Image (tube, rainbow, N blue to C red):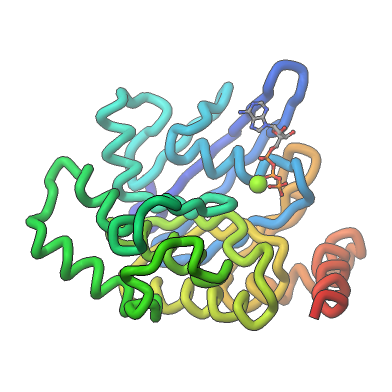
Length: 254
Ligand SMILES: Nc1ncnc2c1ncn2[C@@H]1O[C@H](COP(=O)(O)OP(=O)(O)OP(=O)(O)O)[C@@H](O)[C@H]1O
Ligand SMILES: [Mg+2]
């Protein structure tokens, strides 16, 4: 595998019964790159990134993550990959019955090389400081706004110090200003922790702010790939539409 590629996916195919979701997709992620994946609802964006951490097994293709073939791994090996690949799930649920602090400690306490309790406490504080929510440490999720919950869910993932982050619609359901703050945080975390990221989003300003490269999925394949500016100004109006339609939608919401 190429040294600078942290993800290398080739000829991935996936069907569920008669529903062929991914016909043939190849893509890669470079070290420290922010790659956005756009595409209409149901085009297989979440399926694709779930396959990177073994939550969904493709029917065929090859898939390398951090130099390892994830399609040929036992449970322990896939667990090791999951510790290095943070996943901010669409919806990003926190445990309602736990305070922010306990939510944060939860993944670390289950880690096989568990840090000491005082190290865990320091990691929690440092990570909460980084997402700007140290003052919410003893709050319950029900006391937090949607944007704050997203940031805590992100902090809980970052506390594992992942090499790769997978963001599944990190700004959906948030107002434009809060969305902007999450996008800034994605950039800041890359600087802070040297993270390479895949960002699934419909949010055009999030793509513009965060991404080095964009892939658009359609009909089980890759419709287009390029920089934000290249795709936004593409000759094909079908491709430009992914940017203009969403622009209008956001203006209406704002
Ligand atoms: N575990 C599963 N079992 C069966 N079908 C599934 C499963 N996961 C996803 N699918 C199907 O795969 C297709 C793609 O789903 P996916 O969640 O990847 O879409 P998406 O591009 O992330 O859409 P959205 O933007 O709405 O999140 C859908 O038709 C969905 O019903
Ligand atoms: Mg999805």
